[in-house]
Image (cartoon, helix red, strand yellow):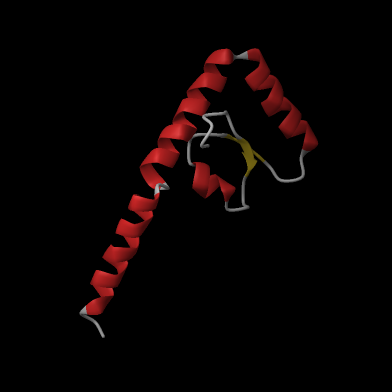
Length: 83
């Protein structure tokens, strides 16, 4: 995601939640699906560029340290009054 490359990952492994709509998703242990996804990227520079840009934007938006710290602060604040 950090390099802005298109991503292919699998359903049901936790990866789909990380990449959101910024990747092509395939079933686990399905070589045919992986090959089809690779072919799709190889056949379309536009899809490759769009997914790569979406991956980089998702990383910037959701996984920067400042964002992670802010999320933890909010969790701590929300529970501090409940102790």
